[in-house]
Image (cartoon, rainbow, N blue to C red):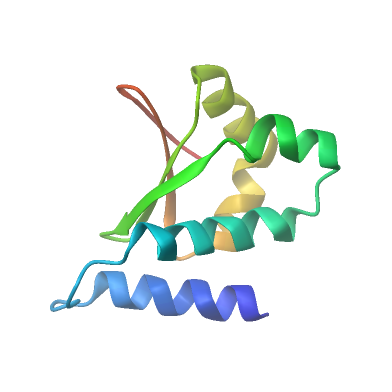
Length: 104
């Protein structure tokens, strides 16, 4: 429940007309870390696929997360995209690798 409250607060802050100072990378990382923790994954799955991911910003209703490869984009989207979308709602997850952007 706390995760959803924090996510909602971040989403509302990011979507206001005058949001004030932009959210820090630390705030974005906190939102991402809480969503990943809520997935309750096996340690080897977490270490391989989600631990390398780094939140790089929140804004305009989106949480941008960098991942190390296109394979990570596909795996996260295909394996956990629906669940992450539910955890992060109303934010939209954007997975970023190099010049590629995937939506979970």
